[in-house]
Image 1 (cartoon, protein in one colour):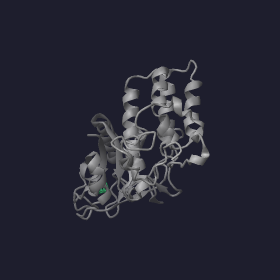
Image 2 (cartoon, rainbow, N blue to C red):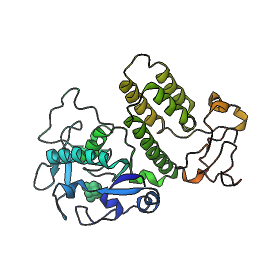
Image 3 (tube, rainbow, N blue to C red):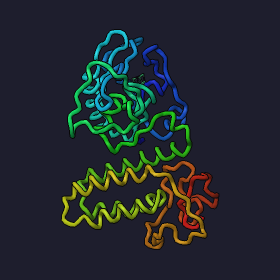
Image 4 (tube, protein in one colour):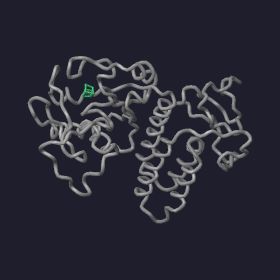
Length: 304
Ligand code: SF4
């Protein structure tokens, strides 16, 4: 079974600073049907204990510090080192996605307020990339270490998964990430990347013709570039393309996206990880019968 990681409190573990949990139904009831979930509570793992004093992010949003609210104890270094260690361990365990607890100074993927204060860490040019989050806010320290170490890993905050289209997209990206990792692990040549691209044409098209063409051009222009560099560029653009919302094609639009359907890979059109669309064929019927697709977000059938 495919593995993802998740903040422990989302699974109902009583690991929060006040001894409570934040059990989240989409994680416990939906994602747990598809994935084995490896739980992580970075604050417990660095020995903060429970109950514990809450912490804040303080200082420079580019490189904030994690400080105990009453004691002023600085947990930044230990949390960053632990985050890097845990990320490497997650990689070894083969996790293909992570659900992070929104709003936590450790786990929050973005938007954690950073209070101005003493002890601002200097920004080292080229080392501290601007955080992908609003001004005056940052990612939690564990979340930052995880995403720095595994930049292509699909990551979502739990509250966003309540939107069915976001949840479907996360599941799709988790599976796609696994396939990409397997391809990358082979030490891909440009011909292997081209094969990978051909077998993912339809799923890319479902997210917009622009990205399909962009990735195709990237391979066509690879020339004498080192295959590792081409693979790094392709992998990052591939995972980015899958973040785009699905686009709808109508029968009236003729040949959607200009793709030569006759040349498209044969077999089930929908990747089976899209729960409502499992087994859909290019003719619009399910492999197991003629039942129509149940998903109103399903759009990858030519002329449906
Ligand atoms: S948000 Fe993260 S650090 Fe906080 S209790 Fe949950 S798992 Fe632990």
